[in-house]
Image 1 (tube, rainbow, N blue to C red):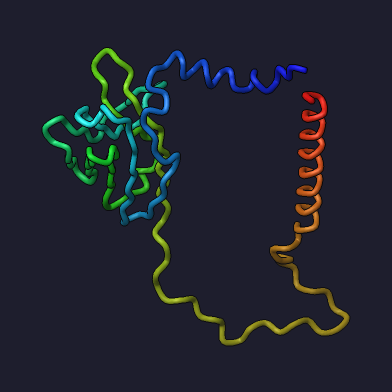
Image 2 (image 1 turned 90 degrees about the vertical axis):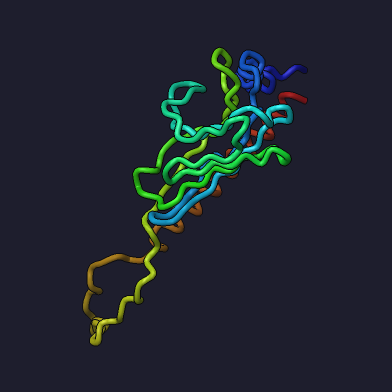
Length: 195
């Protein structure tokens, strides 16, 4: 028996890659994280044959385009620095690395790393989300107050406050069991229907 749901789920992805040449031609991490004041590096890979083409790092524009180019190599210059951003093309390995120094919160956002293919062709690129977190605390550890509060005397109500991190554990565990049962039932149903 033919199971139409299986091939129908893959159809949009396959059609997109047929219509848009160069699908998966450049790959990179979907997200990278760095800390304010630190640096981060993004490594993107590209197909053989694109070694001499310019590599770029840009702010995402609309579908498959750049809003603003930040760094761009050239055929004669595989390394380029612009402000706090450096892009290095390691042509023999088919990868290029973008490094952002002295991160600020405003560096967070949606970017693209890619290969510039020409004026009238769609660039080969991968989307990368940059996450910038506050710098981790490296100062002294907080001190314990000299007089900690005493536990309540017998027969009195406990002080109001946070009941602890395990307050919701039984409900979450129950939800996880229900989700597992639902997924198992769905897999069983599909396998029996398509058998």
